[in-house]
Amino acid sequence: MAQLPKFLIADDPVTDPENEYIFHTEKPRFFAKRVEEDEETAYIDIVEEIDNVEEFYKNDPDKKQELLEQLEDWYYSYMEWLEEGEAGDDDEEDEE
Image (cartoon, rainbow, N blue to C red; front, side, top):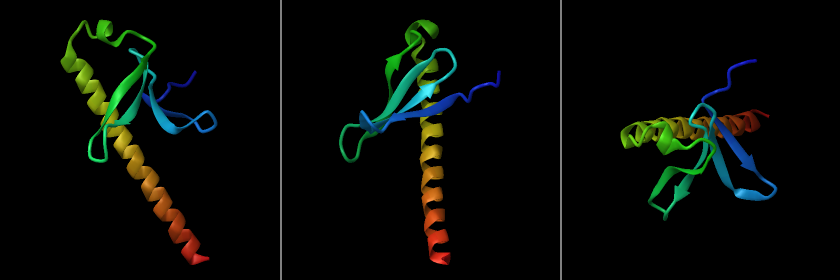
């Protein structure tokens, strides 16, 4: 069986169209999402645990924070990739 990527995007446009989740496929497995407190403040946070994250890191908040920072970097790279794809779609339409 092929190795899964470390992070995957998960969404449900039918029953939960407003949210996009990130699935961490390695232990500790969990779902996270981008939480917007207001127009200026947003962050990535765990919203559902499959494995107990605190227990996995033996209550070491630095390791948990490091993982969340990796996830955040990955997510924002993903968002940039999406934007580039949308910009590329506009260029293709212009050529037609």
